[in-house]
Image 1: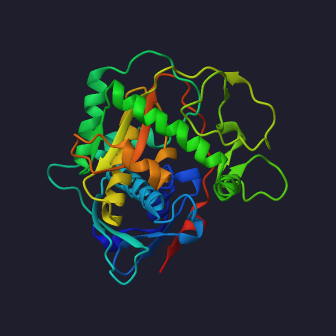
Image 2: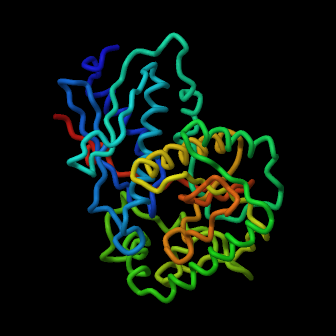
Length: 329
């Protein structure tokens, strides 16, 4: 199929699955433009959906858009198309993050279509996981998935896990002491109270999970402000199974690569029967982020801490309609 043969219903269906990607606080900071004459589908970042206090460099925004880009690639290969991606195609426009053109599959075909069933099944789970260890074979497979996107997934040892979890707990103290951060989180929290933003984005109350019972939970508590109904308390796993996703560089291009690797890892984990959640809290503070890396690792910069395990899969969070994020030109 030539790029110009993409009809609007097909483009719409591709974007509909691309936007199932995870993003910080479910802000969905992406826009798509389909250039019908050339058949190019452009991905743009939406700075209006950024978080100036928690993400001043827009690293998390790029990661979310990179995840949407990977979802688009999966959706395309599922439909027998070969996506050809060019990152940061316009030096004059830093918010023009990628161009994607679609051709017929190569003789060898693509392997991303196998991940397609996980697109709609993957959800963030802020619930306790069991203490059952994740098999080494599955962890090795997830590390291999990250390498396919030019990134590294590190499975930390005991001391490194303790260090990272200590940073997670420290970040919660930082948040509690920073009124601007608390306000930013509240702006993306959806409890049904008057004056909140649209129900098509943000983190709804049903996705908060239970309150921690006796130790600090490994997930962010979006209900900490006390604006939500009473939630049950639960004990979370004593030692969460975490992995760290990172790259050698810390540039917009590497952030987009990290977003694609993140989504690939999450989709593979979903197919492997694992529940997942993201722990970006310590990476949002310059004082803590560098300490998350293993000094002996080739990973220079950590972009996400991924929690893995066996437990509730979580429920789908809302998405904006495709008409809000896709334009034809």
